[in-house]
Length: 478
Image 1: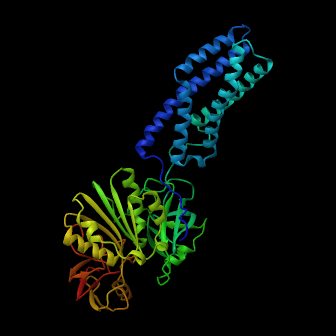
Image 2: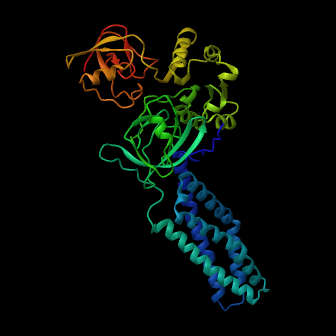
Image 3: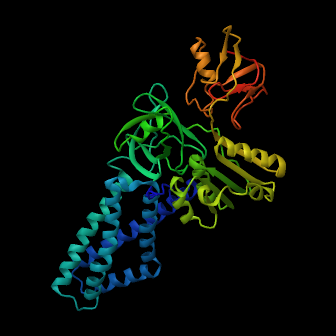
């Protein structure tokens, strides 16, 4: 199995923690800057004063402040700055790294140069070398401190704490760059996307997906599998379907530096709040589950993942999941262990548990049946991969257009309507995005698996012509 070398893109801090740490860092920095400026002023006093007891007095004053914890404050400023920079990705700005280096230099210079030379001079054992070291250390410390102040408060190269969002183009899409393509399983590539200007990408919630416009103009939908709090990078995982329509094969040809366009994230599989969670993933269905796990883990809520695939080599992120959370993750390569006992997994769960499942239609159908029979107390949330259209032809009448077609076994209702001149907007053609859905006037549509949003808000039945069928005549508003 290809090694999953995709980095963990989760920020170290959530928004609330980052705000709290930022406030602490600012307060500590002000105290530290004032203290270091005072120490440098003491050093200048020692260098310019002709009085023999000046060094001794300066050492006594500095020692008094050290006793108040100013030394610990120095390291607290450095530590909080490093955490904030790492969590926000700010080290990509050279001046941020330089500011941190300057702070390290001031602290190191104080400990290695100023302190021993001032100690020697205060004890009356100082030499010309100590005087020179104190002079050089004071000069370099003043320059470094001035640089850190300028970068932090004057911002000569612009703000870095708050990044602006990428701007959509006229049609609402956003141009992004492929940062990296990593094999994460047999026939599965993880593709990392970043903004062209390094700005923030639109926010998203776990379960969201993107419309990805490939270089040929083909549009496909892929679930986001990166941490939902990271707005600097999106990650999708694409399974190459050799018998598909070509979109996944084109996605696998993407390379670092390629530019593509995406829609803002959309979510028809949102994560709700529960006291505990059971996640079930089949194959590439792990992709929308990944950010759900990351969010629930950060909330410190109990969760469990049952992840199935044909064999271990085909299961994307399996090693990463099993290594990171060995007590929460159960892997079922069906070629080795067979199918999990979903009845046992679901039957004993308490009512507040949220069950979120994504995978092929047969798996989603089986889970829905089990919940109905043995665990009606559970709320099952599913996202499925559409199956091919059913075998029976059926008549389909577009009432507004006055067009009737027969949907054969070799094509979808969407293709039949469009082929007859009926205008039906579409996008993913997999029953996920809902772009092509139509209101049903008469008849009973059938969809493969549980299609999210099969009812309109007013209770009207909806038909997804890209994947739906019917056993008899169906009349739609089109």
